[in-house]
Amino acid sequence: MVKEFAGKSVIVTGAARGQGREMALQFAARGANVAICDLGTDRLATVDYEMSGGNLLGETATTLREHGNKVIAHACDVRDQQAVEAFVEATVAAFGGLDIVVNNAGILSGNRPVHEMSEEQFTTMIDINLTAVWRVSKAAVPHLIARGGGRIVNIASAAGLVGAPGFGHYCAAKHGVVGLTKTMAAELAPHSITVNAICPGLVDTRMVEHSAGQLARQTGMSEDEAYDAFLSVHHIKERITPVQTAAAVLYLASELARTTTGACIPVDGGWTAT
Image (cartoon, rainbow, N blue to C red; front, side, top):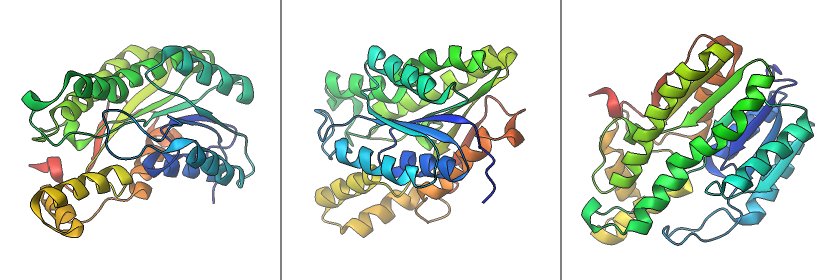
């Protein structure tokens, strides 16, 4: 495998499992030094599926080290600016700089109308899925500037481009990520920093599996039938894999994408095509 990211220093948030884990693995396999973080606890009050916990974060770090590069792993609540800044500073200290940031940390909750959501449920979603993108970027950008340029890739969603009944708070957060991405792209272009996003559809992760399970319990469907019901919004009726979304991130982080900025690329089975 070509080590196209050899010598590069990469941060991936929310990387203990799912898409973030795959993104971190793909960077490590291509020669990068990788810093990962995740919440480091099993529960979050407004989310009724289990979080990644500390064990998965450590297991992912161990797997990353098999590629022979530098790896650091921190439990970090991206709602906490001090914790975020400490994680970024630890990365720079360990790797000597920073080149690429992937803002992947996120949650999914709800499946209820906006007027039935609690304030805690709504604000926690915004805090983790949107405000944390700003927090991490705020901490990281001075180091990217010091490096002479870099890449920021934000994980938005197809739900950041369209509506999704039952998930208004998620849509609001992801639409915000799209707007923030475009604004930061314009602001940071003079520093040779590109800022892009990918907008995945239904990716085969624990988060989406849980939502399919919820639908199954509510309707009496099997979990496979519920997942197929979710996939009805896709024109290509296939579960998207973390490998596929990671591939889009790798492109946006690469030298080939050095003139691409402000883009929000759907990886969504055609969900947003019509």
